[in-house]
Length: 202
Image 1 (tube, rainbow, N blue to C red):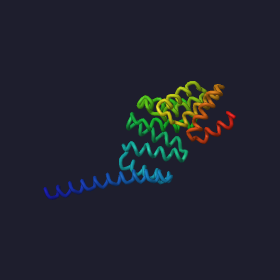
Image 2 (cartoon, rainbow, N blue to C red):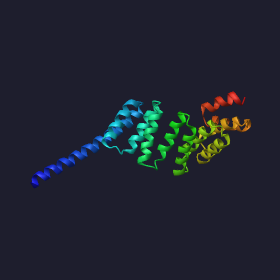
Image 3 (cartoon, rainbow, N blue to C red):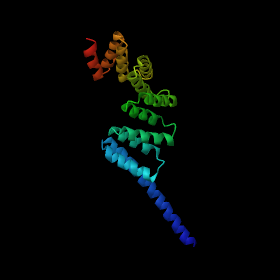
Image 4 (cartoon, helix red, strand yellow):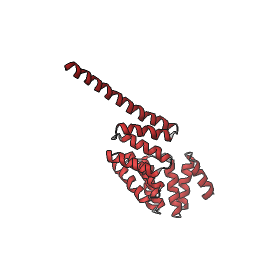
């Protein structure tokens, strides 16, 4: 009896190790496929990892990233929401869910997610920039400018924030301020800002 129990324990331990190994293999295969833009393949691997461990937070989040690339924004939101359900402090999941909501023109929903990401990480520069973009869409240009300015305060080399702030200033007819920001971003090497200088400042 003891011998049989020992054999069963060894088999269970070996099976457990194999499952964990397979789980990680699927997850990292998904990471690799996503990197090489095989988004369908990445989704398939993340789904396999999730089947082995339905509480695998990162797999849900990364599957959301892949769905987002395929413009399945509702599917991406569902995965980010599951990741947040599993980890309510998952800052990146809030930001990325905001990006997907932005694509669906749910700007208020996007702002709520960016704000939660900022609450969790007050130094999250991308969340400030992204919230600025959503506010600009709602024509809250002063609010957008405040967010872009905060992103620039945190990262003085954030070229997109300079350009985006310039756009909001332009909407407010602050042409001098807009062109100053466009030129700053152009000097830092941002092509789209160079086009804005050409179209609006010359």
